[in-house]
Amino acid sequence: MIQKGCPDEYPISLVVNGYEIAVFQLTKHNLVDWAYGYLFSEGFIQTASEVESVIFSEEMGSIHVTLLNGFNEEEMFSKKKHYTAGCGRGVTFFSMTDVKNFEKVSNGTSHKLSYLLKKRSEFAQNSPLYLETGGMHGACIIDEAGSITVREDIGRHNAVDKIIGYALRNSLPPERLVLLTTGRVSYEMLSKAAKFGFPIIGSRTAATKQAVQLAKYLNIEVIGYLRGKMANIYTSTGRVQNDLIKESAVEMH
Image (cartoon, rainbow, N blue to C red):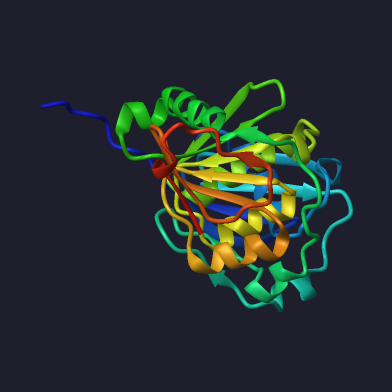
């Protein structure tokens, strides 16, 4: 029998300019990236330069963010909260109607499907928290040079926020990146990716019907079940070239 460690999760309060936004279940790794990514994904900020400071207090279980120009508290808190599905439950202020108003993705580099499968394997091999516990989600970006960066968390949406925060803080151009995730691509996951502008999203598991509909509308390529030599192409924008020898290994939707 192989024994693995238990994945960590902690209740952590996000406080922005003195206002508590919510309490999130998070893994205590790369929390500064998470704060930037969540605030961007939810419309609090548009660029990393709008953040003056991020302070994590382990003793208090809180992340305090100071924004240079503040934010419209009345407008933000008047929005209905939407609780995300899955582990490490989160909250989003964007409805599906809001997401449909996001800017459509009009460009992006193209890749062979075999290349994405190779990178998916590389992603799995470079996920230390998952390898240690067997119970973590991960998100990964592939840049145009083929380098990968991985972020992990108990929640799939938290992991995506962390990798978006990393890309935002490092001024990485979204049109030259590919987003890979271990988790299901649901509408709130698609909305995070769409807001940043990722042209391609790949997952080792499924995408929901609502996410696929939004991806088609926003011109985003979604590839599911990236495993071994198989894949499920949910949307096709021409950015992913099917070069697999066994055509039966690829399902088109």
